Length: 216
Image (cartoon, rainbow, N blue to C red; front, side):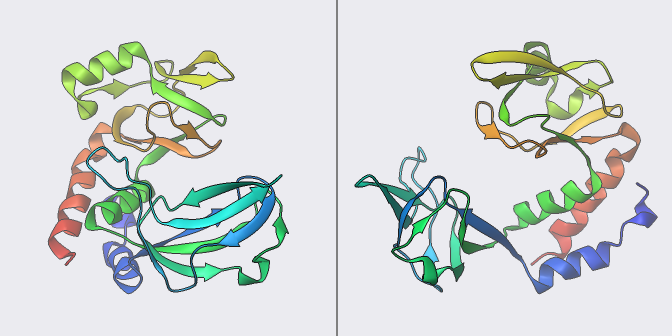
């Protein structure tokens, strides 16, 4: 991707006009639904020095007289809620509300970078870790001091108590941004990290500099 291919003004205008992320909340299993928030309510995500304080209680699902509580993972506002489902039995995977999350400057930069970096996506729903060799190189040289080429063992995929090596099959470059947390399950097709060819690194840095300079 060349610099002239990126419309910086259009990208910045999009986020200035609507600097929010809209997060769909789905039920994790079946049960009778009881909402604990209403449309327009402000919610908080996990807080505390050790991330030990749960977020705002959003809803409960009762199954076999056993209620399970579900809390917010992020801060924001309840933008949409399926009030018609209150007290009803719902299936797993039902979208029941949308949270409107205000994006920080850092998050806006990350969203823009996802548009210009080459994503390496999760081949399956699983937990991921950098391979031992790659993690050792990252620890020694830093994330952007490590180059990738096709055939490199880049990840360990942990699925059903079985670890499988994942070999890189993308274009050569450096890992510029990481989107997964070690040991946390990632959905199939979700980006794990973003790769930047070395000759585009200066372009990426100019993008970051411009957003920092022009975003209030």
